[in-house]
Length: 455
Ligand code: CA
Image (cartoon, rainbow, N blue to C red; front, side, top):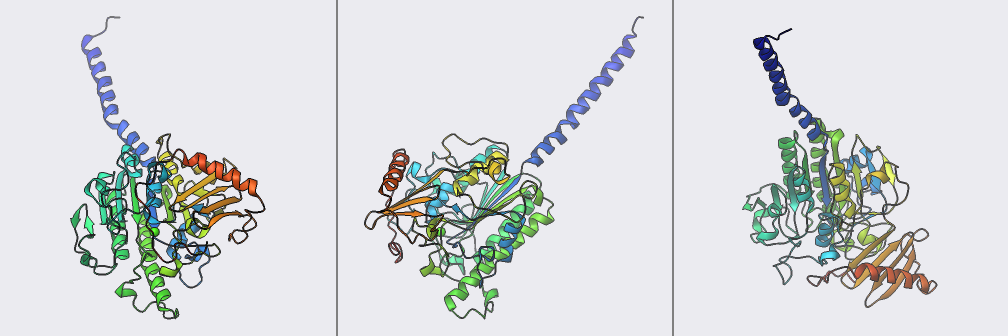
Protein backbone atom coordinates (compact mmCIF):
# COMPACT_ATOMS: atom_id res chain seq x y z
CA UNK A 1 0.00 0.00 0.00
CA UNK A 2 1.26 3.39 -0.99
CA UNK A 3 1.11 5.81 1.86
CA UNK A 4 -0.73 9.02 1.38
CA UNK A 5 2.00 11.60 1.99
CA UNK A 6 -0.54 14.05 3.44
CA UNK A 7 -1.87 11.46 5.92
CA UNK A 8 1.68 10.49 6.88
CA UNK A 9 2.61 14.09 7.34
CA UNK A 10 -0.49 14.70 9.41
CA UNK A 11 0.28 11.60 11.45
CA UNK A 12 3.86 12.81 11.95
CA UNK A 13 2.67 16.24 13.02
CA UNK A 14 0.23 14.66 15.43
CA UNK A 15 2.93 12.54 16.96
CA UNK A 16 5.41 15.41 16.99
CA UNK A 17 2.78 17.66 18.54
CA UNK A 18 1.98 15.13 21.22
CA UNK A 19 5.69 14.69 21.92
CA UNK A 20 6.21 18.42 22.07
CA UNK A 21 3.21 18.79 24.40
CA UNK A 22 4.60 15.97 26.55
CA UNK A 23 8.02 17.59 26.53
CA UNK A 24 6.45 20.86 27.60
CA UNK A 25 4.03 19.51 30.16
CA UNK A 26 5.26 16.25 31.62
CA UNK A 27 8.80 16.99 32.68
CA UNK A 28 7.79 20.09 34.63
CA UNK A 29 5.48 18.36 37.10
CA UNK A 30 8.11 15.65 37.42
CA UNK A 31 10.74 18.25 38.09
CA UNK A 32 8.46 20.01 40.53
CA UNK A 33 7.71 16.72 42.28
CA UNK A 34 11.44 16.04 42.53
CA UNK A 35 11.97 19.53 43.93
CA UNK A 36 9.13 19.02 46.39
CA UNK A 37 10.74 15.86 47.71
CA UNK A 38 13.70 17.85 48.97
CA UNK A 39 13.02 18.49 52.65
CA UNK A 40 12.80 22.01 54.00
CA UNK A 41 15.40 22.69 56.67
CA UNK A 42 15.02 24.75 59.82
CA UNK A 43 18.03 24.97 62.11
CA UNK A 44 17.22 26.72 65.38
CA UNK A 45 20.05 27.75 67.65
CA UNK A 46 19.69 29.06 71.20
CA UNK A 47 22.54 31.04 72.76
CA UNK A 48 23.99 30.02 76.14
CA UNK A 49 21.11 27.64 76.93
CA UNK A 50 22.11 25.02 79.50
CA UNK A 51 21.43 21.28 79.42
CA UNK A 52 18.70 21.52 82.07
CA UNK A 53 16.95 24.68 80.83
CA UNK A 54 14.01 23.11 78.97
CA UNK A 55 10.88 21.37 80.19
CA UNK A 56 11.74 18.30 78.12
CA UNK A 57 15.21 18.31 79.73
CA UNK A 58 13.78 18.28 83.25
CA UNK A 59 13.51 22.00 84.01
CA UNK A 60 10.77 22.62 86.59
CA UNK A 61 10.48 26.40 86.92
CA UNK A 62 10.84 27.66 83.34
CA UNK A 63 8.19 26.26 80.97
CA UNK A 64 9.14 25.76 77.31
CA UNK A 65 6.08 24.04 75.83
CA UNK A 66 6.85 24.94 72.23
CA UNK A 67 10.49 23.87 72.15
CA UNK A 68 9.32 20.68 73.91
CA UNK A 69 7.00 20.06 70.92
CA UNK A 70 10.07 19.37 68.76
CA UNK A 71 11.12 16.60 71.17
CA UNK A 72 7.56 15.24 71.19
CA UNK A 73 7.40 15.30 67.37
CA UNK A 74 10.84 13.76 66.97
CA UNK A 75 13.98 12.67 68.74
CA UNK A 76 15.79 14.18 71.70
CA UNK A 77 19.52 13.52 72.13
CA UNK A 78 20.92 13.11 75.64
CA UNK A 79 24.65 12.85 74.82
CA UNK A 80 24.95 15.48 72.09
CA UNK A 81 27.75 18.03 72.06
CA UNK A 82 28.92 21.18 70.42
CA UNK A 83 32.49 21.42 69.14
CA UNK A 84 33.39 24.36 71.41
CA UNK A 85 32.02 25.69 74.72
CA UNK A 86 31.74 29.29 73.40
CA UNK A 87 29.68 30.99 70.72
CA UNK A 88 31.63 31.71 67.57
CA UNK A 89 33.80 28.57 67.27
CA UNK A 90 30.74 26.41 67.96
CA UNK A 91 28.86 28.19 65.13
CA UNK A 92 31.87 27.88 62.82
CA UNK A 93 31.72 24.11 63.41
CA UNK A 94 27.96 23.90 62.85
CA UNK A 95 28.07 25.96 59.63
CA UNK A 96 30.95 24.01 58.07
CA UNK A 97 30.45 20.50 59.47
CA UNK A 98 34.16 20.61 60.34
CA UNK A 99 36.03 20.86 63.61
CA UNK A 100 36.72 24.61 63.55
CA UNK A 101 40.28 23.89 64.75
CA UNK A 102 40.92 22.60 61.21
CA UNK A 103 41.03 26.25 60.16
CA UNK A 104 42.05 27.86 63.46
CA UNK A 105 38.65 29.34 64.38
CA UNK A 106 39.23 28.78 68.11
CA UNK A 107 37.80 31.98 69.56
CA UNK A 108 35.23 34.75 69.27
CA UNK A 109 35.93 37.43 66.67
CA UNK A 110 34.40 40.84 66.97
CA UNK A 111 34.15 44.21 68.47
CA UNK A 112 34.87 43.06 72.00
CA UNK A 113 38.39 41.96 71.07
CA UNK A 114 41.44 43.55 69.49
CA UNK A 115 41.22 42.08 66.03
CA UNK A 116 38.18 42.93 63.95
CA UNK A 117 39.53 41.73 60.64
CA UNK A 118 38.86 38.04 60.86
CA UNK A 119 35.90 35.67 60.78
CA UNK A 120 34.86 32.29 59.42
CA UNK A 121 37.61 31.84 56.77
CA UNK A 122 36.39 32.59 53.27
CA UNK A 123 37.82 29.35 51.85
CA UNK A 124 35.49 27.27 54.04
CA UNK A 125 32.28 26.13 52.32
CA UNK A 126 29.30 27.08 54.46
CA UNK A 127 26.09 25.20 55.17
CA UNK A 128 24.17 27.86 53.20
CA UNK A 129 26.50 27.47 50.20
CA UNK A 130 25.84 23.72 50.17
CA UNK A 131 22.10 24.40 50.23
CA UNK A 132 22.27 27.06 47.52
CA UNK A 133 24.12 24.59 45.27
CA UNK A 134 21.07 22.35 45.61
CA UNK A 135 18.61 25.10 44.71
CA UNK A 136 17.45 26.04 48.20
CA UNK A 137 16.24 29.48 49.27
CA UNK A 138 18.50 30.41 52.20
CA UNK A 139 17.98 32.74 55.12
CA UNK A 140 19.84 33.58 58.35
CA UNK A 141 18.00 35.33 61.16
CA UNK A 142 19.46 36.46 64.49
CA UNK A 143 23.02 36.50 65.77
CA UNK A 144 25.82 35.96 63.25
CA UNK A 145 29.12 36.22 65.20
CA UNK A 146 31.25 34.81 62.39
CA UNK A 147 33.07 37.99 61.41
CA UNK A 148 32.31 41.70 61.60
CA UNK A 149 33.57 42.95 58.26
CA UNK A 150 31.87 43.08 54.85
CA UNK A 151 33.62 39.99 53.44
CA UNK A 152 32.25 37.80 56.23
CA UNK A 153 28.68 39.12 56.08
CA UNK A 154 26.05 36.34 55.90
CA UNK A 155 24.91 37.62 52.48
CA UNK A 156 28.45 36.85 51.28
CA UNK A 157 28.44 33.40 52.87
CA UNK A 158 25.53 31.81 51.04
CA UNK A 159 22.50 33.38 52.68
CA UNK A 160 20.04 35.08 50.28
CA UNK A 161 18.49 36.90 53.22
CA UNK A 162 19.80 38.11 56.55
CA UNK A 163 17.96 39.82 59.38
CA UNK A 164 19.67 40.34 62.71
CA UNK A 165 23.01 41.55 64.02
CA UNK A 166 26.60 40.71 63.17
CA UNK A 167 28.32 40.73 66.59
CA UNK A 168 28.32 38.37 69.55
CA UNK A 169 25.70 39.98 71.81
CA UNK A 170 22.97 42.58 71.64
CA UNK A 171 20.39 44.31 73.83
CA UNK A 172 16.89 42.96 73.21
CA UNK A 173 15.05 46.21 73.85
CA UNK A 174 15.47 49.39 71.87
CA UNK A 175 17.88 47.57 69.57
CA UNK A 176 18.62 50.74 67.58
CA UNK A 177 20.80 52.07 70.42
CA UNK A 178 23.63 49.83 69.30
CA UNK A 179 25.04 51.75 66.33
CA UNK A 180 28.24 49.74 65.78
CA UNK A 181 26.29 46.47 65.81
CA UNK A 182 23.00 47.56 64.30
CA UNK A 183 19.92 45.49 63.67
CA UNK A 184 19.93 45.13 59.92
CA UNK A 185 18.26 43.55 56.94
CA UNK A 186 20.78 42.55 54.28
CA UNK A 187 23.26 45.17 55.45
CA UNK A 188 20.78 48.03 55.80
CA UNK A 189 19.87 49.38 59.27
CA UNK A 190 16.38 48.56 60.54
CA UNK A 191 14.55 50.65 63.10
CA UNK A 192 13.29 47.61 65.03
CA UNK A 193 10.69 48.40 67.68
CA UNK A 194 9.97 44.91 68.97
CA UNK A 195 11.90 42.78 71.48
CA UNK A 196 14.53 40.91 69.47
CA UNK A 197 13.28 37.39 70.26
CA UNK A 198 9.79 38.31 69.02
CA UNK A 199 11.24 40.16 66.02
CA UNK A 200 13.28 37.10 65.03
CA UNK A 201 10.17 34.90 65.35
CA UNK A 202 8.18 37.31 63.16
CA UNK A 203 10.90 37.26 60.50
CA UNK A 204 11.15 33.45 60.58
CA UNK A 205 7.39 33.07 60.07
CA UNK A 206 7.54 35.57 57.20
CA UNK A 207 10.39 33.70 55.50
CA UNK A 208 8.53 30.38 55.69
CA UNK A 209 5.35 32.04 54.41
CA UNK A 210 7.18 33.47 51.39
CA UNK A 211 9.12 30.27 50.62
CA UNK A 212 6.76 27.43 51.54
CA UNK A 213 6.40 26.34 47.88
CA UNK A 214 10.11 25.74 47.29
CA UNK A 215 12.82 24.01 49.29
CA UNK A 216 14.25 26.36 51.89
CA UNK A 217 17.00 26.48 54.52
CA UNK A 218 16.30 28.71 57.51
CA UNK A 219 19.05 29.28 60.07
CA UNK A 220 17.34 30.88 63.05
CA UNK A 221 19.96 31.86 65.61
CA UNK A 222 18.31 33.46 68.64
CA UNK A 223 20.57 35.41 70.98
CA UNK A 224 18.32 34.30 73.87
CA UNK A 225 18.95 33.50 76.63
CA UNK A 226 22.40 35.17 76.34
CA UNK A 227 22.84 38.21 78.56
CA UNK A 228 21.66 40.95 78.99
CA UNK A 229 18.57 39.51 80.71
CA UNK A 230 16.09 41.94 79.15
CA UNK A 231 12.57 40.56 78.85
CA UNK A 232 9.91 42.01 76.56
CA UNK A 233 7.55 44.69 77.90
CA UNK A 234 4.60 42.41 77.06
CA UNK A 235 6.04 39.77 79.44
CA UNK A 236 6.47 42.21 82.34
CA UNK A 237 3.99 40.37 84.57
CA UNK A 238 5.03 36.82 83.70
CA UNK A 239 6.29 34.33 86.28
CA UNK A 240 5.43 36.16 89.54
CA UNK A 241 6.01 32.82 91.30
CA UNK A 242 9.75 33.00 90.56
CA UNK A 243 11.09 35.07 93.43
CA UNK A 244 14.66 35.58 92.27
CA UNK A 245 14.62 38.56 89.89
CA UNK A 246 17.47 37.35 87.72
CA UNK A 247 15.90 33.91 87.31
CA UNK A 248 12.52 35.53 86.61
CA UNK A 249 14.03 37.63 83.83
CA UNK A 250 15.70 34.52 82.46
CA UNK A 251 12.30 32.78 82.42
CA UNK A 252 10.71 35.73 80.60
CA UNK A 253 13.52 35.75 78.05
CA UNK A 254 12.98 32.01 77.50
CA UNK A 255 9.27 32.67 77.05
CA UNK A 256 9.84 35.11 74.19
CA UNK A 257 12.02 32.59 72.34
CA UNK A 258 9.63 29.73 73.06
CA UNK A 259 6.56 31.65 71.85
CA UNK A 260 8.39 32.61 68.65
CA UNK A 261 9.37 28.99 68.03
CA UNK A 262 5.74 28.00 68.61
CA UNK A 263 4.59 30.50 65.97
CA UNK A 264 7.16 29.11 63.54
CA UNK A 265 6.08 25.49 64.17
CA UNK A 266 2.44 26.55 63.68
CA UNK A 267 3.31 28.26 60.39
CA UNK A 268 5.09 25.11 59.15
CA UNK A 269 2.05 23.00 60.06
CA UNK A 270 -0.50 25.41 58.56
CA UNK A 271 1.54 25.56 55.37
CA UNK A 272 1.13 21.81 54.91
CA UNK A 273 4.89 21.20 54.86
CA UNK A 274 5.40 19.76 58.34
CA UNK A 275 5.94 16.15 57.21
CA UNK A 276 8.76 17.14 54.91
CA UNK A 277 10.47 19.72 57.10
CA UNK A 278 13.54 18.72 59.04
CA UNK A 279 13.82 20.86 62.19
CA UNK A 280 16.87 20.89 64.45
CA UNK A 281 17.03 22.70 67.78
CA UNK A 282 20.17 23.02 69.91
CA UNK A 283 22.19 25.41 72.05
CA UNK A 284 25.53 26.80 70.84
CA UNK A 285 27.24 26.02 74.18
CA UNK A 286 26.48 25.10 77.77
CA UNK A 287 24.93 27.55 80.20
CA UNK A 288 27.04 30.23 81.92
CA UNK A 289 25.18 29.69 85.19
CA UNK A 290 26.73 32.58 87.16
CA UNK A 291 25.92 34.92 84.27
CA UNK A 292 22.32 34.16 83.21
CA UNK A 293 21.11 31.56 85.82
CA UNK A 294 21.05 28.80 83.17
CA UNK A 295 21.52 25.28 84.52
CA UNK A 296 23.58 22.36 83.27
CA UNK A 297 22.44 19.73 85.81
CA UNK A 298 23.68 17.11 86.33
CA UNK A 299 26.83 18.12 84.50
CA UNK A 300 29.92 19.88 85.74
CA UNK A 301 31.12 23.27 84.57
CA UNK A 302 29.74 26.03 82.38
CA UNK A 303 30.10 27.75 79.06
CA UNK A 304 33.91 28.08 78.42
CA UNK A 305 34.64 24.67 80.01
CA UNK A 306 35.43 21.48 78.14
CA UNK A 307 33.57 19.69 80.95
CA UNK A 308 30.20 18.20 80.04
CA UNK A 309 28.44 21.34 81.31
CA UNK A 310 30.22 23.35 78.62
CA UNK A 311 29.73 21.09 75.61
CA UNK A 312 26.75 18.79 76.24
CA UNK A 313 23.70 20.74 75.14
CA UNK A 314 19.96 20.37 74.63
CA UNK A 315 19.70 18.98 71.09
CA UNK A 316 16.70 17.56 69.22
CA UNK A 317 15.33 16.97 65.75
CA UNK A 318 11.96 16.36 64.14
CA UNK A 319 11.23 15.10 60.64
CA UNK A 320 7.76 13.65 60.77
CA UNK A 321 7.85 11.62 57.56
CA UNK A 322 11.19 9.96 58.40
CA UNK A 323 11.85 9.89 62.15
CA UNK A 324 9.86 8.41 65.04
CA UNK A 325 8.07 10.70 67.50
CA UNK A 326 8.89 11.07 71.17
CA UNK A 327 12.08 9.00 71.15
CA UNK A 328 15.27 9.60 73.09
CA UNK A 329 18.64 8.83 71.46
CA UNK A 330 21.52 8.40 73.89
CA UNK A 331 24.63 7.68 71.81
CA UNK A 332 27.26 10.44 71.53
CA UNK A 333 27.04 12.80 68.60
CA UNK A 334 28.19 16.32 67.76
CA UNK A 335 26.74 19.44 66.16
CA UNK A 336 29.11 18.94 63.19
CA UNK A 337 26.71 16.13 62.18
CA UNK A 338 23.86 18.48 61.29
CA UNK A 339 25.38 19.64 57.99
CA UNK A 340 26.09 16.18 56.51
CA UNK A 341 22.71 14.90 57.77
CA UNK A 342 20.89 17.73 56.03
CA UNK A 343 22.96 17.78 52.82
CA UNK A 344 22.52 14.00 52.43
CA UNK A 345 18.78 14.29 53.14
CA UNK A 346 18.55 16.89 50.38
CA UNK A 347 20.25 14.54 47.92
CA UNK A 348 23.68 16.20 47.96
CA UNK A 349 27.18 15.14 48.94
CA UNK A 350 29.48 16.78 51.44
CA UNK A 351 33.17 17.43 50.85
CA UNK A 352 35.52 14.72 52.08
CA UNK A 353 37.04 17.13 54.63
CA UNK A 354 33.79 17.29 56.63
CA UNK A 355 34.13 15.77 60.11
CA UNK A 356 30.44 15.28 60.88
CA UNK A 357 28.48 12.22 59.75
CA UNK A 358 24.98 11.65 58.38
CA UNK A 359 22.91 10.81 61.45
CA UNK A 360 19.89 9.35 59.63
CA UNK A 361 21.11 5.71 59.46
CA UNK A 362 21.72 5.84 63.24
CA UNK A 363 18.47 7.57 64.13
CA UNK A 364 16.38 5.19 62.01
CA UNK A 365 18.17 2.12 63.40
CA UNK A 366 19.81 1.08 60.10
CA UNK A 367 23.17 1.39 61.82
CA UNK A 368 23.45 0.22 65.40
CA UNK A 369 26.80 1.68 66.50
CA UNK A 370 27.51 5.22 67.66
CA UNK A 371 27.91 7.95 65.02
CA UNK A 372 31.41 8.68 66.44
CA UNK A 373 33.97 6.56 68.26
CA UNK A 374 35.91 9.63 69.34
CA UNK A 375 35.09 13.31 69.91
CA UNK A 376 37.67 16.09 70.40
CA UNK A 377 37.81 19.59 71.87
CA UNK A 378 40.45 22.30 71.90
CA UNK A 379 39.74 25.60 73.56
CA UNK A 380 42.31 28.09 74.82
CA UNK A 381 44.18 26.42 77.71
CA UNK A 382 41.94 23.36 77.69
CA UNK A 383 41.65 20.19 75.66
CA UNK A 384 39.45 17.11 75.90
CA UNK A 385 38.88 13.82 74.17
CA UNK A 386 35.96 11.43 74.54
CA UNK A 387 36.32 7.81 73.52
CA UNK A 388 33.53 5.44 74.42
CA UNK A 389 32.82 6.06 78.10
CA UNK A 390 36.26 7.52 78.75
CA UNK A 391 36.90 11.23 78.82
CA UNK A 392 40.29 12.83 79.31
CA UNK A 393 40.46 16.57 79.83
CA UNK A 394 43.39 18.84 80.49
CA UNK A 395 44.00 22.43 81.54
CA UNK A 396 47.47 23.95 81.00
CA UNK A 397 47.61 25.18 84.60
CA UNK A 398 45.30 22.80 86.45
CA UNK A 399 46.47 19.49 85.05
CA UNK A 400 44.90 16.37 83.63
CA UNK A 401 41.63 14.60 84.51
CA UNK A 402 40.26 11.22 83.53
CA UNK A 403 36.63 10.24 83.97
CA UNK A 404 34.47 7.27 83.13
CA UNK A 405 31.21 8.89 82.10
CA UNK A 406 29.21 5.67 82.34
CA UNK A 407 29.76 5.55 86.13
CA UNK A 408 30.45 9.22 86.66
CA UNK A 409 28.57 11.48 84.23
CA UNK A 410 29.10 14.48 86.53
CA UNK A 411 32.91 14.18 86.30
CA UNK A 412 33.52 14.04 90.06
CA UNK A 413 35.89 11.10 90.35
CA UNK A 414 39.26 11.76 88.66
CA UNK A 415 40.82 8.44 87.63
CA UNK A 416 43.99 9.82 86.01
CA UNK A 417 46.29 8.56 88.77
CA UNK A 418 44.66 5.13 88.71
CA UNK A 419 44.83 4.64 84.93
CA UNK A 420 47.95 6.46 83.66
CA UNK A 421 48.11 4.26 80.54
CA UNK A 422 44.59 5.32 79.55
CA UNK A 423 45.60 8.97 79.94
CA UNK A 424 48.66 8.38 77.71
CA UNK A 425 46.59 6.57 75.10
CA UNK A 426 43.97 9.33 74.93
CA UNK A 427 46.59 12.11 74.90
CA UNK A 428 48.35 10.39 71.98
CA UNK A 429 45.06 10.14 70.11
CA UNK A 430 44.27 13.81 70.75
CA UNK A 431 47.79 14.78 69.60
CA UNK A 432 47.31 12.83 66.37
CA UNK A 433 44.03 14.68 65.72
CA UNK A 434 45.53 18.05 66.62
CA UNK A 435 48.55 17.54 64.35
CA UNK A 436 46.19 18.05 61.39
CA UNK A 437 44.72 21.28 62.82
CA UNK A 438 45.65 24.89 62.15
CA UNK A 439 47.03 27.23 64.80
CA UNK A 440 44.35 29.43 66.42
CA UNK A 441 43.80 32.58 64.32
CA UNK A 442 43.35 34.67 67.46
CA UNK A 443 43.82 34.08 71.22
CA UNK A 444 40.62 33.23 73.10
CA UNK A 445 40.87 36.02 75.70
CA UNK A 446 37.97 34.73 77.73
CA UNK A 447 37.81 36.79 80.90
CA UNK A 448 34.43 35.87 82.42
CA UNK A 449 34.84 35.10 86.13
CA UNK A 450 33.80 31.48 85.81
CA UNK A 451 36.25 30.55 83.02
CA UNK A 452 38.87 28.95 85.21
CA UNK A 453 36.61 27.88 88.05
CA UNK A 454 35.48 24.35 88.82
CA UNK A 455 38.60 22.68 87.48
CA1 CA B 1 26.71 31.15 73.21
